[in-house]
Image (cartoon, rainbow, N blue to C red; front, side, top):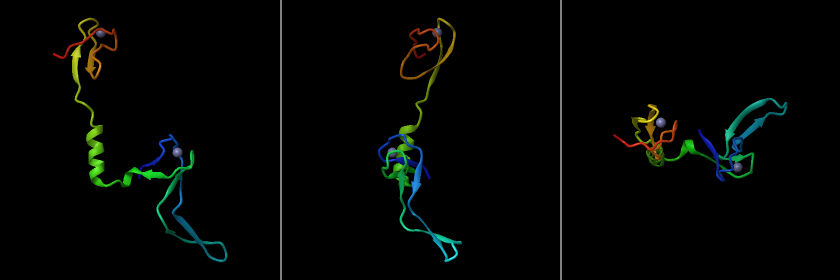
Length: 101
Ligand SMILES: [Zn+2]
Ligand SMILES: [Zn+2]
């Protein structure tokens, strides 16, 4: 299970709506049953989504998108720092422009 706010408000606390607790006449806990799945964001009150239950196909897509780009490693010619190249081809140490070998 992985809950997120449907409004993406950043809230991390959610309240489960589905658990209906049943008590007997003495108040002793008897059982709970699933009435209807549902969570609300405690931060903004919006319905929350369980990303853990998205269809497998959607999950596969998301994983594909999230897959990290394979990084090339180059040695900075100026400061000799080993740099993993990403989008910006600059040495994080000295700011020199780098080229993929
Ligand atoms: Zn929210
Ligand atoms: Zn450098």
